[in-house]
Length: 261
Figure 1 (cartoon, rainbow, N blue to C red):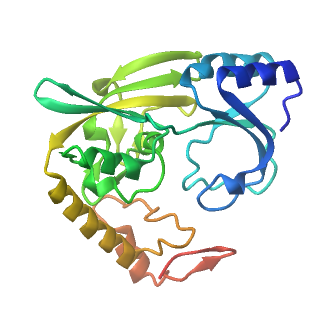
Figure 2 (cartoon, rainbow, N blue to C red; figure 1 turned 45 degrees about the horizontal axis):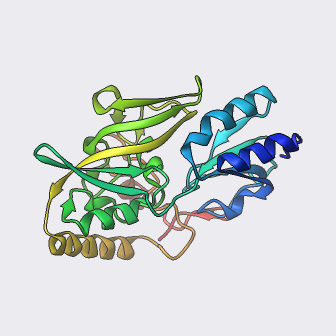
C-alpha cells in the first residue's frame, strides 16, 4: 500500500519512522511467506503517537508486524501498512532495585540476545527462553515459554502504546493477564519496554544450561530450516508432540508446509 500524502511521509521520517511502500512481507517473516504491504519501521518509540494519529486522519488501516517470527501471512497483497519497531544498540538497560535485579528491555530486542546480555551480568532465570525465536515484544504477547520457563512471571512493568486511544501507559505486572501462550494485551497494543526481575546466578552456570538446552533443541527441531519450532500448544494434561507421533503425522505435508520428522 502506498501513502499518497508525501508531506506526511516526510514528517514521519523526521520523527524517526521510515516508510517503505509495497514491500514483500516474505522478506520480513521468519517463515518466508507474505504478499506485498506497506511497512513503517519506527526507530523512536515516541514517533508512534503522531504516526498512528496521522494514519487515522488519512483513513490508512494499520497493524503490528513485530519481529515477523512465526507470522503466517497470506501471499495476497495487503491494503494496509504494518508498523515495526526497529531494534537498536541501547535495547537492554540494567539497574538494581531493592533485593532483586531488574532489567529494562526494549520490546524490539531479540529475545535470545537479551537472555545472553543478562547472563553476562550474572542474571538468570530466562535460560529456557534462549532458543525461542523472535523479539521480546512477541514473547510478551504470547507469554513465550520453553523447558519450564515462561516470561510472564518475570515481568514487573510494561510500557505500552494503546492503539485504541493513541496513548502510552505503564502497566504493573498484576494488571496484565499472562496465561498459557497468551496474554491480555489488545491486538492493537504495541509494547515498548518491559522491566523484568531476574535472579543472581553465575554466568558459567547459565552458559552451561544454555548449551544443554540448545543441544536438546538441535536434536529435536530442524533449526536450519524455515521452522516455526514447537508451534503446537499442548492440550491440558497431554503432549502435542506425543499425539503427533502416535497419529503418524510426522512428515505430513500440505503444500509447502510439513510437520518435521
